[in-house]
Length: 189
Ligand SMILES: [Zn+2]
Image (cartoon, rainbow, N blue to C red; front, side):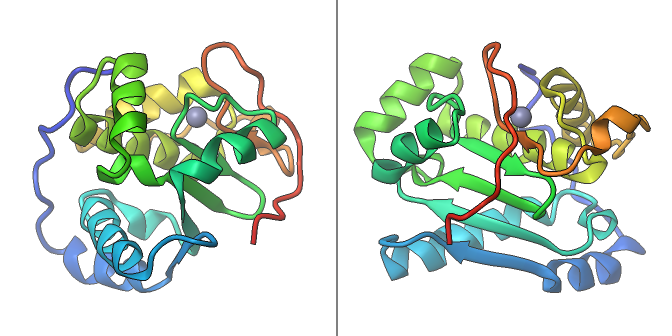
């Protein structure tokens, strides 16, 4: 985990136009049961974070917010670490983020802050940049995604390493604390 979160320098032209265009090809959803007003507000928040990163290099990607009450059952079903509030499915190009990252559900927030030893704004930034590390580089490895996320937060990259192993289809990146990513088909929506 990187302590240097929150030092993001806002990007300047000529990337502005490219970034606005890149934002328009991002797809945003809230999973079943996510309250509409909260969904709209949280997606705006997510978009404001994404614009700090060079998503013009990303192409079409889908972002899904999931209620905290549904997060652990879904994580367990997918054999992911339920203490991790985000995961990415590389082949369908989808990233899932837990509601609590957007400052909802005090009980879960307390749990996440204890688990990750981070404030919630930092944890959200960390989660988004880490998942972008997976996404930009089709990178299933957790340690590499951490490193890529750190670079992204410093305004660098994406500095992908080409690895044939990293191009396996259907790999889910989201295992933390020693959990291995598992193969699965996304059927959440
Ligand atoms: Zn990961």
